[in-house]
Length: 182
Image (cartoon, rainbow, N blue to C red; front, side, top):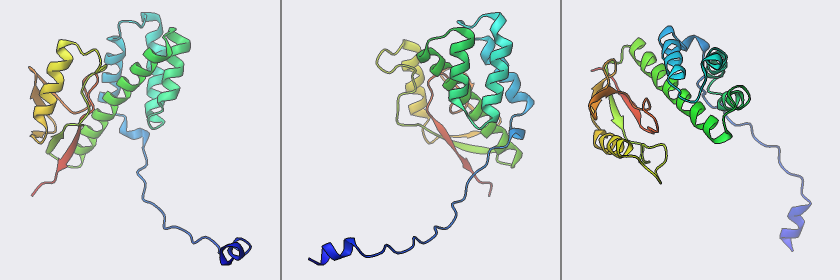
């Protein structure tokens, strides 16, 4: 019956946990280059009319500055451009992934990091792995082969006939690990 008596004992005060270090996102990380690429990426969307591009750009920029608020952007794409929820989610994720990859690259360069290692995400680098196109299959194979390769942060890595960085292509789930200078 000792377990029954434990039910009625007062609970000890919880000990405070040490504070966890966090990384705060600053809107100052969104540079002119990030904004220019965001504009280019929005203009390249085939299902977005010209009349909606400026509004979508402003919402996308606000959601990126808010620290990657995908819901804000996806909701705006549905209401402004009339996209389906699924398509709006894909577009929001793609725009944010590209912006995040560029912000990370700019941050590394500003800190004096010159090289990084490509890390394959162990998930297919495709938009839809159940129905991959030939281009997506080639992209995934190239990204898988690039795993562990060292590249210059400013330049990127030459894969599948073009220079690119982890997370910059549609469906890419790759990341990078910085290489600290000697």
